[in-house]
Image 1 (cartoon, rainbow, N blue to C red):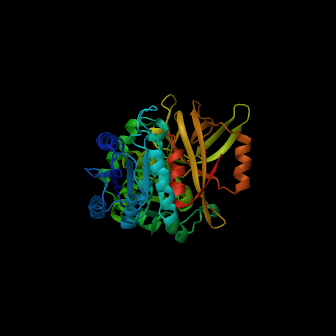
Image 2 (spheres, one colour; image 1 turned 60 degrees about the horizontal axis):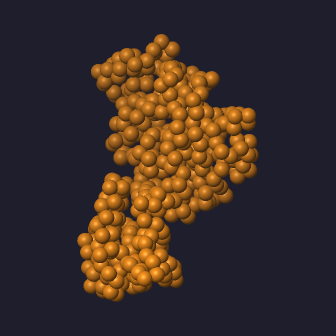
Image 3 (cartoon, rainbow, N blue to C red; image 1 turned 120 degrees about the vertical axis):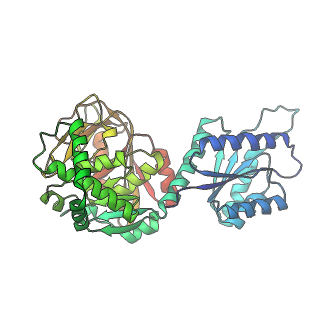
Length: 449
């Protein structure tokens, strides 16, 4: 996985425009970008780019730095030569950033004329077939600042997706046709690679985990939770699986994984829900249950955008009076997502009764609910914004109640109409705009409800 996005940053002008404002923007906007684009590599041109020589020098430096995208800030009016030449030399997208014009009156000349330059340059880039975006507004303008950051985050995520290695522990559960996937289409669309590890390797590795490690982990879990609801051997199997998955994921270099969590794992009394929950928090190892790769793609994008763990879930109920949706799953939600107002317990699996699962209600806050869907051989993104509200658990497993702006009845009807499968990924942050930006870069239609 390519971890770091390399961003080229230039400030431009043409002709004899005054230099005071461009030099100030070069300094101020450069600092702002460094402060707001943490975790990425900003390659700054230290002088105004305005001549053929500075264009070529900057392009050479950006090539050496393997720049992925260029932010071109208008210090003052700039002709088509700089944007088109940079695009031709580097063959990467260009973000044209036009701050607002400084105040002027009828007896004052324009000092930037950036909007005209951005409009002009965008038209020329389109005519020549180059990828570009326009941000209109100064860094102090919330719409412009958030738009720029969302766009860069989207490029960063797409950059990370290319080469992401998704490990497959088994294929899919019996009769779960919606968990089937098209590996070639995923590779072409997202750049995600896949490799598989047979479940037998997991079971064999479990047997090899040392008694010392297993006993220490069992002691840790016993100190944190009442384990009296777990049948004999279930806690030991939990600890063995916890370490076995860690070891294999590291050895295989998996960035994320899916798992066929039943029926085989249940037959060996090791259904992995609680293990998956712990791994997401303790080791930043996100494992998607029931082998659902497409739901996992949404979790991967959400995790890369927010660095927060997600929750793979079913939607089991609606309340039309309160306009809420209830999301539930067997017990796989990370403990960091639990609502501490309510008890959190470790139990036997709520349905199969053959493993470990956490029971609890999930925390409140803004959420983004999403799933990438292969519909008729083309990927689409299902996207829903909502607010997780305070609600107690009313069935075994983990659950959360989400309030939405759209009618919950219409949401369900449209999900069925569009043919969207039953698993979704929830992250506790409003990442919808960034997910839309990622989808646009990947050429994926968004179904937003």
